[in-house]
Amino acid sequence: MKQNRTWIVVADGAKARILLYKPLQKGLQQLPDSEFHHAHQPTHDLVTERQPRVHDSIGHARHAVESRSDPHDQRETQFLGRLAAHLDGAEQRGEFEHLVVVAPATAMGELRKAFGPHLKKRLFAEIVHDYAHQSNDYVYQHIKDSLPL
Image: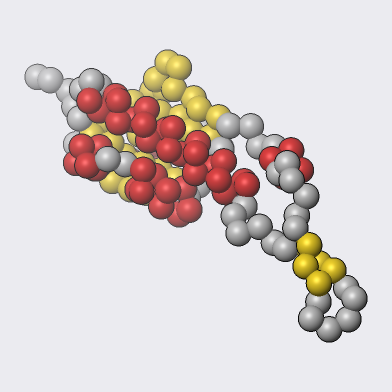
């Protein structure tokens, strides 16, 4: 009897790992080379230009104009896009049958946007929690009721 291979992706905006779940075995096994990180840099390292200045309409004060996009948010979006591309490639190679994604709301939204149609078909469950810094055993205990049989 063939066991279904279910990948569990546990991610946030800066870190992710892929775990393997096989229904006939208890617990989760981390896949080799399946940890992804992006360095969280201070804002001054991400922003190269000085903020533009504007004059008050009354008086002589000058103020910096806020950037329309947060460089940290951009980095997280890029990181999650790379993760989605990795998962898409694995799906095309047939490395898993089901996908379960565990991520906080913001990261989950970015992943949803980045997932292609084939990857979305493999999506078995979305669990909105921030377990990226928890142990694999902890993750299993909290999501086992959402896994395929």
